[in-house]
Image (cartoon, rainbow, N blue to C red):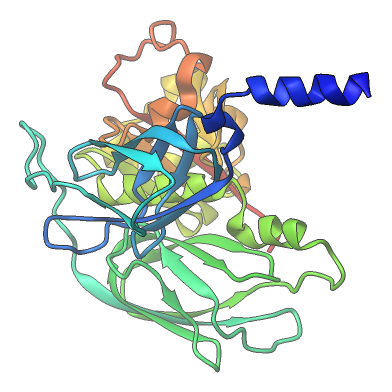
Length: 338
């Protein structure tokens, strides 16, 4: 009886507003001044430091939030950073956030001009040569914002740009595909993905189908491809295949991107800060990587998105590496066994 009385007394001491706290789900949409959705906007919820990214329709969901007042910080390349406050539980849902677009010319930065548009088509099939319907096909930096395969597994990117194309294909229940190619004229390719075995946990299949934490790396890749500064160099697997028996540095000097990167043989053994697969920063010289190991290579003399600096953080001492704060960096995407 005494223990029950003690528990009852403690409960009476808990403030009413804390006792009433319960999980909330904050549903919202980010749009611009013309009410068009803002996809892939980065949202930070404080307190709690929870981070999410809006989907292609500008929508977002944040689950399991206690009652109280919070601050939402919203960032997206091409828009002014936005900070709003929200109190939960909401009186009206969904919660709407409006971002203001920046002008196309920022200070003295010149936005890269778009190249000629060409048509790129393909078919997605599984390991049994069956078409995969409803697979999401995204070309990093392309204005299509992703398409889905039809009932025959076909897709078409009508607004692809000439140059290096970085392609990502994913669907729940299948291994994701990531590949690069040099798009010079209209072409059609076959993309093969593998089915996941049945009976695996749903959370595992979700992550292994391309919907895990590495999603952020591909969102950042898309931003860098859209906002390349002058002097940026992108090399595809097809650019490197001719020089597959060389190290990466030697091979890059023979690709179309060489004129932008201005690499010299004497610099091949210089340690550099490299972001591997868009996620992991490492310090090593380019000549320690074999060209036949690389799916795609990015060089940004100035990273307008800030995504490279966010990944390198304190891992790379820029002064020790002889680089300024404004310098971008290197991103290496390794080949995968599709």
